Length: 286
Image 1 (cartoon, rainbow, N blue to C red):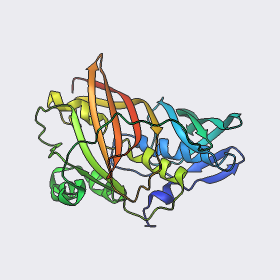
Image 2: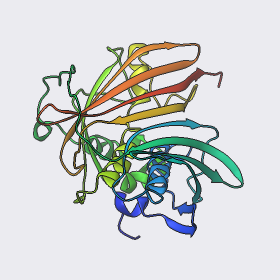
Image 3: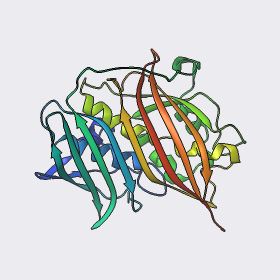
């Protein structure tokens, strides 16, 4: 197996001027990991930008489940290149069907008014928190064979959940989750590459926060979960090979949908990115 790195996943094959192809990873989920499609779509858009433009936000919709056994083709539409902002629309195609749309905005960086009314929670540092993979590797006999085979594809992200959340035996708790995250590889000081990596990682453990007040496992066979839409805003430069704290909370569930919002802080307490997601949460008969 070739080396599994986020950079390799985000290095797309150019087919034509606005067409790119990305390889897929099977993370052991029921469908293609949504973070992969977001990260690759953003990377495809980056390839078409004027020099000096960096992403500051994107908004996306998931239309159909993706297949982790096949690559994804990305078609980029140049909506606008202005004096300081650019807009791109990206369509993800698999097996001849549109599975995902993303609209992203990019800006030439400039100085302006600044404030931050967001406080980083007081949590243990990442060095004092066990890796999430440590838990999963210790329970190999309790997880599916497909998930066991997929563990290597989870290793590029070092995620460490501050609270002990056992997906096999969940208990009811407040809909908040604190997760330290960083890439396991050295990352160049390329803002757009770091943004694509964080877009990928932002889908980890996110929608599951909505289940905590209900004491339901993401592996419950009567539960159908899927991302409907996902938006993200980038505020300050960061390098994803340095620790970021992902603060996730769910203010609402209802109508078989769950809403979750997140904030990424660096270790100095600076808010570097924000994100929101709505997802399907439907209980069905076996």
